[in-house]
Image 1 (cartoon, rainbow, N blue to C red):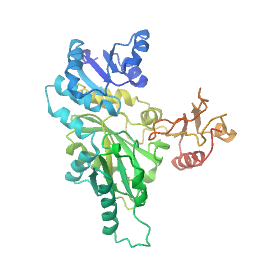
Image 2: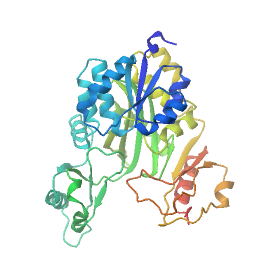
Image 3: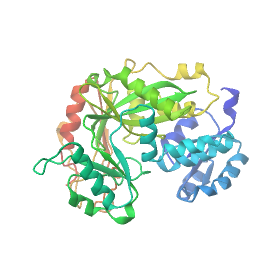
Image 4: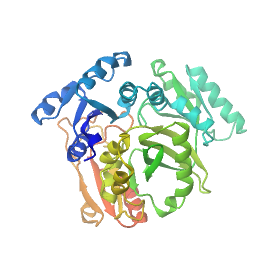
Length: 406
């Protein structure tokens, strides 16, 4: 092992996959996570610092002191709410205040859109909204700009919180009455025009400002289903997509770690920037990468976050993009379509399909289905693996219509 890897890495947030991944690397590490994981950490001999990430960032010095005592050299963010904490820890550990400001940029959807726009990426029209009147005005102006007449179908707009992960708090406004459903405490919000095209995400592993591995994840239905690597129809745009990623890396001055941007691509190959995150993606994408390519994306993130990782280590770790994948790994996240669950309904044709790998659907302790917040609380996933992207997409579309919970 590289002698520089003897210092401790702090994982910010709780992820068993990330813990197992760093454990296998033989590196010293500490997990900084919610206090309710303390007993599990003790029982499994995981070095653990309990921490609430919803406290003001001004309390970060207290956490920094604890980590400094443990010989921590580096903080790695696991989920959205830990991105600015990792930025703050690293700015103190590396004595570089700019690292914290960059992390704030990657947490604010309005700021990130502006930065991307300034860097020459295509973005939709966007503004911040502080009240319902702002939304009504923006909605009206977008439709005026598109010369929509009274009888025409109006162009929708989207509103979303600045700093939430995925689709939490995301609303589509199709007509003025939709604005009334927004509670006053949801403001401020980002408003943006609707982008047409196929949505996809990228997972770019970056070291010393260079993209070391670029995965493209094809979304079949946002928040429900995706697969890795993308189909040949989307992968054919890889050179153009890589160019946009490199623009993004330059614009946001990302030197180390992973970024998870989402884009829209039109049939003619015009690419529009949606948003970007600086943490492990949702939708089980890291597990897909491992199943398709055979390397741990969690380990890839840790290697890329560490400035002391050598070129040789990275070249030995990352395989060749697309051609080295053994097949396509996909999954469907299952949401009950009923209000109370009585039983599971798993069709024989699912289990008999050669692409079916496994599922982890379950009958919950309470039959009442929890209210949905974004796409965060699906009731299990179904994993698929196979060689034909067209068949994978067809399967995911088909089974998304099925009622697995009755």
